[in-house]
Each structure stands twice: as structure tokens, then as C-alpha cells.
Length: 146
Length: 62
Image 1 (cartoon, each protein chain N blue to C red):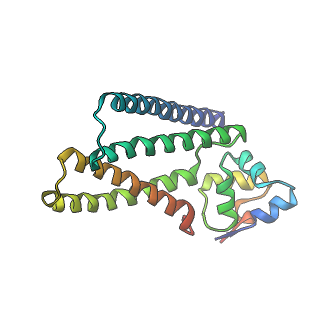
Image 2 (cartoon, chains in turn red, cyan):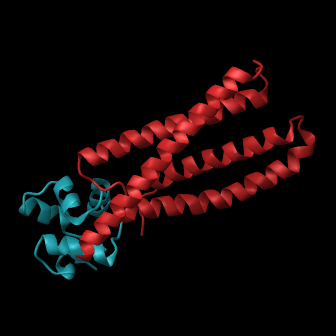
Image 3 (cartoon, rainbow over the protein chains, first blue to last red):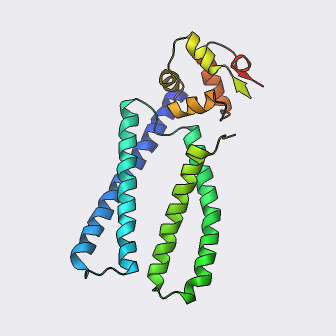
């Protein structure tokens, strides 16, 4: 009975996460379309950064949904104890590295000719990239997970 | 810690996916376990041992 309850809970959590990703995907696409149609066309660093972030989110969301779809077809759980551990380790490592990133950004802020919101955008993008690298490291390169 | 999962899986004619489905984990987790790259939780070790009809200490060797 408890196993059944745990399985149902897992499926609900997984479904909620998938719905959340789809909602975020729709919001990103809508915002991106609004931004493209209403903004002046310029190709400075800030604009290119603003183009890169939605593209990364879109690619991630498409890969995420495709993987969940394949898992569902093979009747595999979307997550288990190993994938949760890898996610936890990636989050922990990327948080520590990100602190140094923000220290570096804080120290060079006055020396670069960029607006505040562009620097913050670059920092957030940097955090996402660091998390992605940490996840790849723990998922494919690190040899053991004890 | 080593384990006999691969050997027992071959004995029972189970694929990695079959075993993963039976114990409710992803196939990658079974791959990591067989290669000795991951030590399972007590619950997962118990579930795997139960699939093979054995005790934990007969499947996982310390």
C-alpha cells in the first residue's frame, strides 16, 4: 500500500514539474515574441545576451520534454535516488562556484562599460551555464557517487 | 562495495530495463550499480535483493 502511495506521489511530482516546464516555456516564448515585435533592432552586447537566454531556455525545455516523453514510453520513472543525488550535488557545487562568479562580477563592475541590468543578466546566465557544466560533470564524468 | 547484480540478472534472464522497472529506478541507476560506481540506499538494496529472492548480504558484498 505504501509502495503504491509512494509511486503515486512520485508520478504527481513528476507531472507537476513537467507542467511547470511547459508553463515556463509558453511564458518565455510569449515574452520573446513580444520583445522581438516591440523592441528596436540593435545588436549590442545586451541585446545578444537577451537573445541567448530564451534560446537556452527553449533548448533545455525541448530536451527536458523529449526525455520525459521517452521515459514515459519506456515506463521508467522520471527521477530516482541517483538522479536526485546528481541534481543535489550539481546544485551544491554550482552554488559555491556562482558565489565566486558574483565576486568577480562585483569587482569588475566599475571597469566595464555595461549597464547594470546587462551585468545582472550576464551573471544569471553565467549561473545557469555553471549549473549545466556541474550537472554534466556529475552525470557523465565523475566516476563514482557514494 | 561490490555486487552480483549483473550475474543474478543473467541468471534470471532479466535486462537492465526489466530490473529497473521492477525496483522503480531508471536504467542508468542499474548501469551505475553494476559498474560499482554507485552505492544504493538501503531501500533500493532491499528491493533488488527481493527481486532475486535473496538476502541483501548475498547480493551486495562488503
